[in-house]
Image (cartoon, rainbow, N blue to C red; front, side):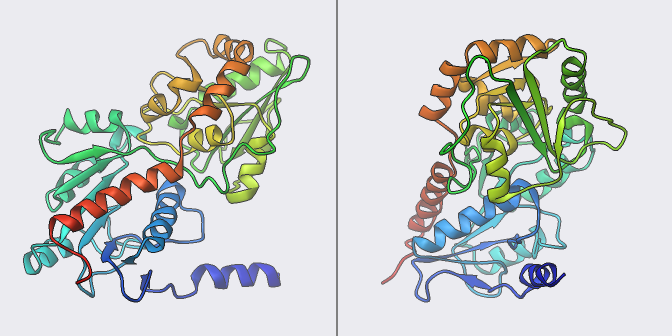
Length: 345
């Protein structure tokens, strides 16, 4: 009980308004505050970026209460962790037109079958002068609906914290051992691929996928009754990385996912990826070190088993990386600040 109370106090303790040196190179305002509670990939991105920018001399704040050089929109929907939105940014830039605004887009309606996200993103993007998409698939998706591809933009794929998600000490599959497949999701939305995970569970239970295990981590639809899968509740951080490293191949059947973190975390732990052809950003992340499938996941799993050594060597050679992601954002922030002559006198 005492441990849980201390954890809650740490989670909701007042956060510093500014992170970084007292005399910064430049200042960046991000409209989302970080949290230690589970908040999906956006919070993982935020924690890494704040740490990276602060370590390189930038002041990072989460409001517009002081002059800043760059403003970053993570989510346009004000409330909760989102402290300010497009209206506040527009008013701020009317007063301080030299301030740049970067819109990081990592969502779309196709991901969860909604009908409002695309419109909200299009409206918010009007106050931005630079856009970052988390995948080429997502850029092309929005370009086919509202985004003008001639406007300044770039694609920066996501990466997980390499201090947590890494292949050191990972279990390696060898012939004669069961091949452990793993998937993990915070969401229980069906579009995360639960139809395929149920199919794999049935194949294993019915003996049609021998010498194979399925580990499911996180949440899943209440109506699912797993027959053979080994399940774990929602897990994050070092505990999640340790679970992933006990497995051999990552399985994602998520559909239309703009820039999913789950196959990235698996790949950074040294796992080849079996992924759905309609996986959206997951396809770009996984194609070099993975096997695609559409209607025949069993054949894809068998191919991953047969090519395990080759695919694992590929993912170890060029994994997705949070370090690489941070460097690309750092370059962008530096370039925008330099275009205004921002910097110490």
